Image (tube, rainbow, N blue to C red; front, side, top):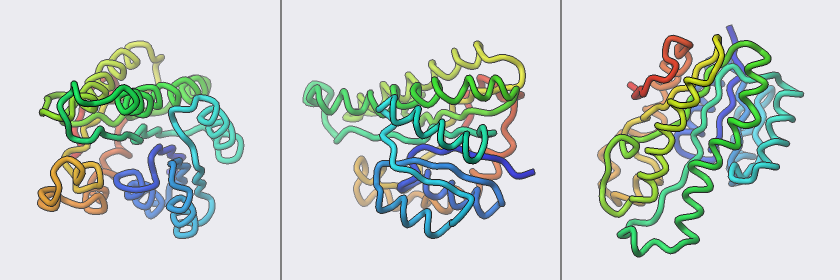
Length: 226
């Protein structure tokens, strides 16, 4: 059965790879990102009925308008993937200025909650749905020079598990560690060392089927992608 899938952060990396993967499987994808050019390219590549829009997830009003538009034109999502995230530049915590720290918090935590605020009530009324908040290996462990990012991903773990306890029957919330993938984000941390890891496209070949089989049995479980 074809599903409606909502993905944040589809301009590049995992989000873009997942959007293409779900579309190939016959599912309808609604995605958002901040790079209008990349979104246009993705829209041209995948065509209708898929929809891609420029949205800053840290802006609650933009998120509200986007989700309202998606649900009006396509329907209430069956699967929501809160994937959008940024990472700080490598530096000791005390050298990260307040603007950069705020920006990481605003995208990685507030952006997730903005989506939850507007999509979960619709899924509750529908009586079903799965929401996956992308965590990280750095949401369950730590490394130096990425403390702000670690803080947000640890927060995603706790936020999602608490949300899972609040949801009614028929819904599920799951924190997911996608693993280590060669994306721009990893390259910012590891430089050329990121090339030893699999690409987002290779990752998506396994991750898309895995995500599609998630259900209420997984509610509140801290999972890792295969």
